Image (cartoon, rainbow, N blue to C red; front, side, top):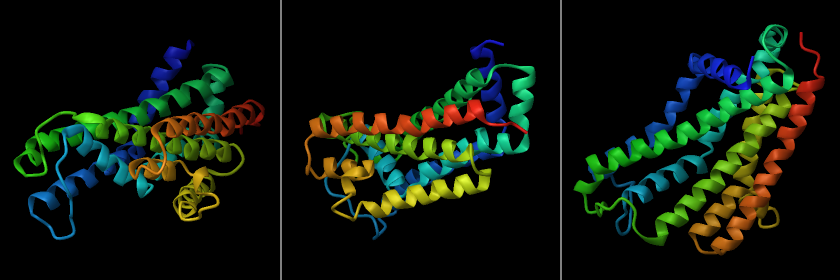
Length: 253
């Protein structure tokens, strides 16, 4: 079977899993934020106004600062890899369908598809909320995108997405050696560590989320942030490559 057909089969299989629907939890935050703004809630304090893209980016950054996408996507990738290894479903695929390398690539492409899909869905949902509700308040200027500030927030989005990849790739690697539940809990531990390490000056530059925060507060330049993005992206591939090698050697039961 070709890679495209394996990818299509894996995508349909994952879309049917209830765990995939949990990704929609991410849409709760912008909904809550809009309701709070519209009701003039006292816990919401915003200066100035913002365009649609900036509104979406602010919500995405608030979401990822709490580690919610990392945890949800770690749960998803646990089901894609570790859970199926544990349940013996992968062995059946290898016997009847394709090679290990092709299956590993197809499964990871499914994860990438759903990650990018979640990000785009989140942005589309936030933009719809913006034009339905926020433009009616003093906080909405009615523009789709305005100026360099929105571009800066999108750079922050990229940094946070790279952190998601680092966490999830580590979970894939752990899933090759531990049971699904244990690898997922370790993924939560890695996410928590990233949140905590931001407060330690000596190691905070090893945390992508801190770089995103530093960009927003103009503590570092955009050029340095881009360089750090490249470094983090390279780092994110290390556990993925190790996981691929472990997958090739693993005794499937």
